[in-house]
Amino acid sequence: MYISDFKYHRPKSVAEASKILEQCDNGLPLAGGTDLLVEAKKGLRIFTDLVSLAGLDELRIINEDTINIYIGAGITHNGLVYSDLLKNKLFALSEAASKIGSEQIRNTGTIGGNLCTAASCADTAPILMAYNAQVELTSHIGKRTIPLSHFIISHHKTDIKKNEIMTRIIVRKQNKSTAASFVKFGLRESASISVASSAVLLHFDSGVCNNASIVIGACAPTPVISENANNIIMGKTIDELSKNSELINKIITSASKDTFPIDDIRGTADYRRHLVRILTKRALAFAIKRTNILN
Ligand SMILES: Cc1cc2nc3c(=O)[nH]c(=O)nc-3n(C[C@H](O)[C@H](O)[C@H](O)COP(=O)(O)OP(=O)(O)OC[C@H]3O[C@@H](n4cnc5c(N)ncnc54)[C@H](O)[C@@H]3O)c2cc1C
Image (tube, rainbow, N blue to C red; front, side):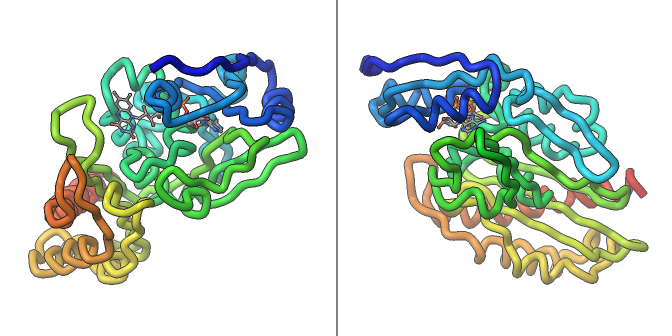
């Protein structure tokens, strides 16, 4: 199918991009195009104007201050994979990005596009939610910063306004006894959308878990924070979480019960619930192994 005629804009600043979006009848930002152009060719996205973000260098910066790490929304997935800062300080995000699509998709698709598409199977969202990330949304009027968990409202539905551009993803620096991991299952080894995924973040104080976040992807319209699993983990020691199989069984059962999966071409709801148990068990084991390295 051909894409209908549209106007193409190439602004030089976020403020200019925002003004163009405000003035258009139905304009959309274009980042890597790996979602937008595919959907447009299927007739699923109609627009009068495309506002390219390619000229906006400010979206392609990763940096830090004493409190946070800031990731430009225009950073590609391979940009997340190969960033030394992220590999050292937010390893599980680099890990999640390395499992997205193929080399071509990782070189083109961006973290901002992944979050703004808000597909229930998106791979950067669960781990960023586990990290309690915030997103910065900028227009020519100003900026606002909201938790990612509020930004993603449902499958393909976000809180973004017509004139807003996602500019940065903000993650608080993790302390040395925090460890995280991300595990996904797709139907092929590569270029494969998640049938289910699990992100785990554990924080220990003197060997006792005082903050846990398990977030399940692709098993509900948005990533699901499993409060029941988190509550079971809190107060447990690294030793208990490494060795007590009955405890692990309770955690993964709770994570699975907290999801709302559907049947679709990639798998049934029951199969997804089963996958959540296995993936969460693996993600927990990886995270706990990493705490041993960190401590
Ligand atoms: C073959 C293939 C395999 C894939 N595999 C995976 C996978 O394994 N895991 C996964 O999670 N995804 C996968 N995807 C989906 C896709 O590649 C990602 O979601 C990608 O990150 C989208 O980013 P993009 O830069 O291409 O966004 P675009 O397609 O340019 O934009 C997507 C949407 O976000 C909006 N947008 C983009 N950037 C901004 C911004 N800064 N501010 C405001 N709005 C913005 C656009 O207007 C559009 O609505 C795959 C896609 C393909 C084609």
